[in-house]
Every structure is written in structure tokens, then in C-alpha cells.
Image 1 (tube, rainbow, N blue to C red):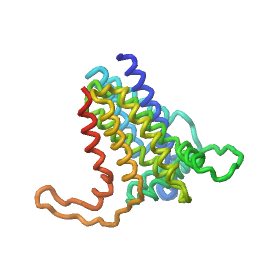
Image 2: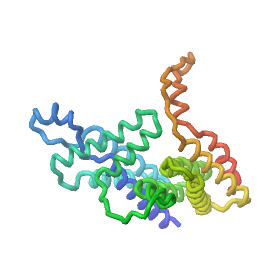
Image 3: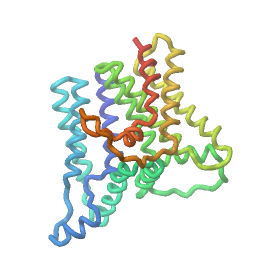
Length: 300
């Protein structure tokens, strides 16, 4: 059992490192910083503070994963190995200035998306940034076949299925240590990723809704089935229904277009200001937590 969990954790971390290096490369610099900082000093851009924090974040992930597997010793080994691997993957290849500047553009796109407070614009930036350096393969055009177009859009955003796999792998690793907390986290993470699928299948074409529902149904069925890897519930039918409600409600509520233009902060006199507009945007679809908690409560 422990060997399987170690393999799952290694696979999950490897996938995360691959995705992270593509969307937030370590060796990157924005063009304005190159023009006004590095170029006048005749310096080649190196690893900046953003990249150091990025590596530290992965070190924290390795620390937590290692602790789940082998407590203190595992935490130390996991933190060092994961941070070192993330660093090596980011700097092992020698690259010229044009590539470094291009990486800076990619990193700036993903970093800026979190400040837009517009779900459609952020999703478009994610897709555009992910596909900036993708290899395009010519394919025959067979007309606007809706399900084929939807599946192709999801597959081109390959970070979505990759993160689905990471969710299941890390869930399998964490459940023996965190039990119901890990199960709820996996279920909610699946719902959030399903919202990305729901958004990606939106083509703005007539007659697309049944096909969008079918794709979401398949993703939901896979998500419910994945829960059985984490533990068999006492009441399978009720559990499956509640898990399906969690995934579908979270996907539809978070996957619909939403934006926030209310940045007012209300003082409560105790804990400082509360930005209700931003909280509403960040936690859209929070009602999915209720069926998730009820579903996990059925697992022994």
C-alpha cells in the first residue's frame, strides 16, 4: 500500500511540475524589466524572486506529501527532493534571450489573469498562454461537429485533464492521513475543474446545450467513480447522487460567465475590511460544499 502511495505522489508531483513549468517558467523576464533593468547593466536575466517563491511553494507541497507518507523523515526528504526537482527542471536547459523574454510574456499572462475578476477573460488567457508554444498538427476539416469540437477544445487545454489526474493521485495519497477532509477536498477540486470543462464546451452555437450536458455528465460519472478509489461508501446510490450533485452544481455555477466590479470594502470593526464583492467572485458555487459534506459523511 505504501509503495503504491509513493508512486502516486511521485506521478502527481511530476505532472504538477510539468504543468507549472509551462505556465509559470522559472527562467523568465518581462520585456520592460529587461529594457530598463537588465539591459543597461549588461546582465542576462537569472532566477528572480518570483521563481524562488515558486520553488519554495513546491518545497512546501513536497513537505506535506512526505509527511503524509512517512511523517517527519518523509517531510524533510520530500520537501528537499520536490524543491530540487522543480529547480532543476526550470534551469537545466540553456536558453537564449528571446526564449527568456517569451517565457516572461507567458508568465505575465497567467499572473495577470488572477487580477481581472472576469471568469471568461481569465479562462481565455489561460488557454492562450497554454497554447502559445504548442505544436499545431494539421487535421482534416469535417464540419462543425459539436461533440468533436467540444472534446477537442478540452483536449487542447490539456492542463485540465492533467489536473484531474493529479487530484485523484494526491487524494489517494492523502486520504489515509486526512480521511474525510481529503475526500471533501478531492470532490470539490473535481467540481472546480469540471467548471473549466463546462466553460470550454461553450461554443455559442445553436443546439450545443445537450452535448455540453453530455460531456459534463461523462466528467461527473468519472469523478463519482474516482471516489470509489478513496473508499467504498455504506450507501452507494445515495453517495453517488450527492457526489454527482456536488460536481454538477459546482461546475455549472462556477462555469457560467461571472465578473466583479464591486471592490468596496466594508469595515466590520473587528477584523478589518471585508471585500464582499471579491469574496462572492472567488467563492462562486460554494453551495456545492453542502452535498460534498453530506456525501463524504456516508463513507465509513
